Amino acid sequence: MEETAKLDTLQQVELAEGMGIRLRMAGPMLRIVAYLMDLLIRGVAVVAIGIGLTIAGFAIGPQVTSGLGLLVWFLLDWFYPVLFEAGKRGATPGKRMMGLRVVQATGSPITWGQAIIRNFLRAVDAMPLPTYGFAIVSCLATKRFQRLGDLAAGTVVVYDRLPAPPRVAFPPPISSVPVPVKLTVDEVRALGLFRERAGLWSDGRRAEIADQAAVLSGARGAAGVTRLMGMAHWLQEKRGGR
Amino acid sequence: MTSGDFEEKNQTRWLEYEELVNRLENGKSVPHAEEMPRRFRELCLDLSLAESRMYGGNITERLNNLVIRGYELLYRTRRAGWEKVVAFVTVDFPQAVRNEWRLFWLCSVVFWIPFFVVMFSAGHDMRWVQAILGADGMASMEQMYGGKEEQISHLRSEYGSNFMMFCYYIYNNVGIDFRTFAGGMLAGLGTLFYLLFNGLFMGAAAGYVNHACNPESFWTFVIGHSSLELIGMVVSGMAGMRVGLAILNPGRLSRVRALMAGAKEALPLIYGAGLMTTLAAVVEGFWSAEPFPSALKYSVGTVGWILLIAYFLFAGRRGRDAA
Image (cartoon, rainbow over all chains, first blue to last red; front, side, top):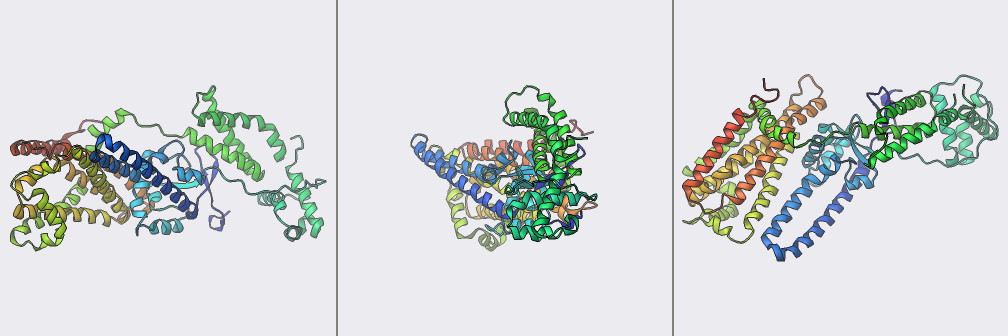
């Protein structure tokens, strides 16, 4: 399949083990929501720590309190995303809520250095302040939705676990129909997907799609749907192996 | 073999693997953890079989997720220990700075020339200095260094104010270092802007104090921490320019590849710059404003400069890959 013909956001990544895994890249919309979540979490943290420090201020003095406040602000500003993304889960709390994770372009967890690079360069990505305009333009202009910090660090933001596409159970075919001709791998996949998704569509839509393969099934309309489902079942069913 | 057969045949193995991954992810002590690499390779094989035989979404998606989780476990990077930190300070950092000596001079020039030009311009004509500092800036310089005696130690007399200023210097100065680095992403323009701006502003402050305030109170204050702070700033500029030049002049690499390589090379510089500026904040917070005799402060500050220059010239020459 040609890379340019792709419509979805799955990226094939080749591992050293000689096989590929598929990572689903996360687009800007979801990442903006994750960012806002993090902003909210940080805001709550600042308020909570601020209240704590104000109370502690009676004991340790107002100067020490405001100093600690500045230190907390500095750490939250620069190191909150670094610590979480370099950590075990590879995601800030906001990203985790949205089911996202930061990984290297090769799919492996990111290093400290990469977490530092991608988050320190936020200062440029956020420009023109505070719109994150550069980041959004960069995301839309690159194949893997990378903002400038991602490009420099060689990281991507992906869905942590690929969300299962919605499937609605469809009554299993009554009979399995042997496929008379040899199908290409893409055709086998198309039949499998047709079966998996058939429950999502109305009768009319199912028939409409099945009519595209009328040459294979030898029937049109509802009969064609039944035969295609039978063939898909035949391709997938248990036959005791070879 | 159909997908149903395939699934039935391997089901137990997949469940065992998933159980193992679950335990390892939770970080508990796991029996048979040494089986993980072998099981991972088996899963990789299963996934490529399922892919090439087009077994459909359910199976490949499940295997794909299992393989990704195993991959993330196996390829986790080990955290650096204290030896790494010591090696960084004694060898890696000074080496990194020496390797980028061209950038060191470039950034130094961009900072020091405006600094001295503005500072000496105050002797002939105060208008540049006045334009740069503004009314508020001049007022605060007067407040800190205006009088005959050392006002700055009076300003610090309240309990905890040394600590407060230390935190402020971390927040402000280390933050500026990081921004200077990030500015490199704008093809180096952001970095040059910060260096130039700091040069102009600090030069204006020095010039103003020399001619309108009490210079001794200013210079005794800054001499202690200036070595760490100013060279730290120049080093953060080097980190930014490393990134900026990678974009401007990628050489034989593609621009994105060059950017990644440049950012990686800039890392020790930005770590070091952050470290130096943090140390400068310690000195500035707890030493510089103390009411010690001027001679003591001048000599300690000068020794600091000499030690720091010696550090960058000689430290780590024999260590690691210095040969």
